[in-house]
Amino acid sequence: MDGVETFRSTTNQLLSRLSGQEWWRLKPLLRREDLPARLYLERAGSPPSKVYFIEAGVLSNLERGDVRDPIEVGVIGREGMVGMSTIAGLIPQRDTVVQIAGQALVLGCLQFRECLSSAPNLRSLLFRYIQAQLVQISLMASAGVRASVQQRLARKLLMYHDRTGTNEMPLTHENMSLMLGVRRASITHAVHNLAAESLIQARRGLIAIRDRSGLERYCGGFYGVAEARYAEIMGDLPDDASRQSDEPVASPMLEA
Image 1 (cartoon, rainbow, N blue to C red):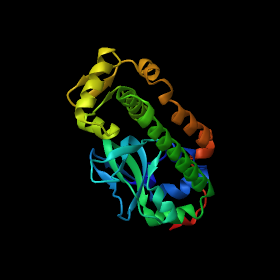
Image 2: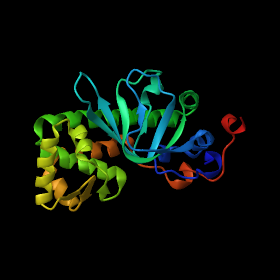
Image 3: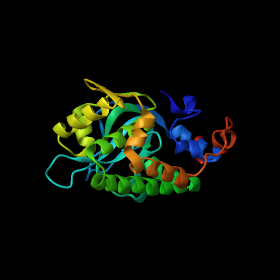
């Protein structure tokens, strides 16, 4: 699909915050790609080739700090992107894998760095996004110490629900074990208890949210802080007219 002709809008919340001028500079370089489940977009220690602005689906940042199975230390959806290390010309230190299939707007790392040199608003947005991700990671670590397995699972399901916008999510016990870094037996117990309270419904390879408000109450203070801080850090969206005007502005990238 030709990005130059078709991308008049995007569900990615970072790109949606761009000014009209910066949007039109970036737009011709973007291509939409499908992101199938289990696809690795980044590998720790390997130089990336692309930057991904997520439009749909859910991705996990995985930490493999020792020889045991990896654990999810960050969640990314349409509010964010993959490829932050590219900003500083660094190599990723964590794996990033697609947990729930989706789509992204993609461009090469070299093109991305060239765009940053003439896009101060984009640079500012990405630095703020990095701060928001650090907040998420720190609160995830806090919940890992203080919350029960069931509260942690409820919190992660809410985070995934925020990013998919659908009540039914294709999640297996293997997925959820990775999300929390616990044994599958612990996941089975937690799922059973949440289902018994009519908060979720579990079927083979599928989790359905039955009572979102109930899940939020169940989490207590372990859900909502990172989400509120994301909104605070990122600020308000500009209006549609200034964000993605139908009229391109003069730009060397458009003429290239």
